[in-house]
Image 1 (spheres, rainbow, N blue to C red):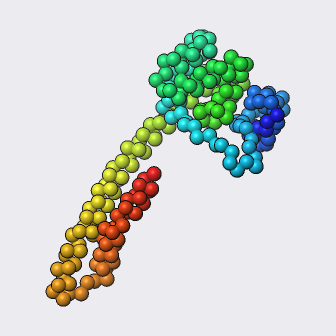
Image 2: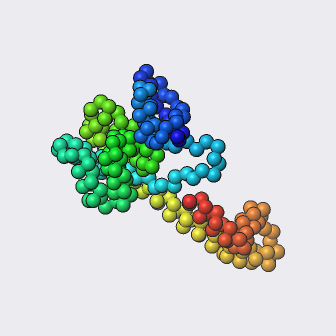
Image 3: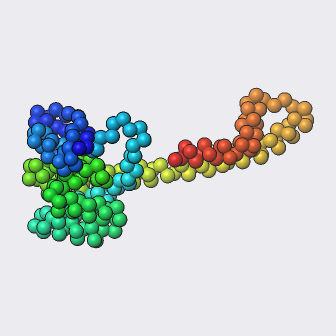
Length: 234
């Protein structure tokens, strides 16, 4: 027996969390259904193991999820067998992660699981929101409409993400160019200017001295500055 951690909705709409013992994932889903709750998230519980391996899996991108939802919605509306349609999607998909995920779902469905069961599995690369919405669609008989709505939702999410990336590109470029100019000025040009001023007996202003010290630090420890920049970007 394994322990599975879950979050679910009761009939009155209250959200609950807990741990349930079961033979496997599907058995855990079955036991929770018997309790008349709607499962939102279900994964194997590894309490007390500080070194338990955590999934480092890559999640599917929003545009890929949108394409999958739209294509599968068309399959359902056309009356094609779900397994046949999914197998066809897996073969035609140009995304390796999506193809593997669809193949996993097909195998789960052949084993008696539902689409939402497979998408709520801890191995699933689909977001929990989509998994929960699919479960709702299956329970209410509106899976086609849910998939179409989620396709539009993830399409909008992808557009917003792209706009944010495009909007942030210009400031990043300006910042990098500005830093390079500041580095060159404080490390090479300003020290020569200060030497000329000191040679004629002039006193260096405090602000100029501070900038000079920054320039010398950047010149002597440029590799530390570079590491900080790279770390900030990451």
